[in-house]
Image (cartoon, rainbow, N blue to C red):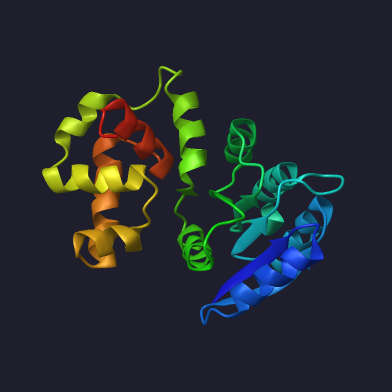
Length: 214
């Protein structure tokens, strides 16, 4: 069971997310926070698997709260998935630097959000297309981004999987599109990470852009 903490200053929004998460057989809402400070306190006390975090909240905002949760040994293991209506480049980069594992707009489809919670709970990184563009623009200005020549090690199927990762597909969506099992899709992604020398899916996106796959 995936244990979820909701953090949003709008009661109606929290209620909607609570109903959605509660409708999934493999998830449960373990707490709700209306401020960043409350989110940090509850994350420490409840140790949820995933925190759905809004950015704009009174006092400590969601990004500062994310940084505190990630750095707090008492909340160790909690993954933060940021949901916001303010998907600006600055917010995306601040959120990722704070340690968020995912970044999605609040108008994300309900089924996509539930899948995102599962993906983040499993330890993967998930970014919306808008967030991906911000990361790529930032990373391409830095010399340490993965070199395109590393993609020469990939098979044709692995390059296709990388392209799908780069446009924001989850492992399940990759499996559906390529007509393979989710385990096979996950194995492909793991092999690509190793061959490219990337730490996570974000850096795979960067590599794909550098190589001209998109």
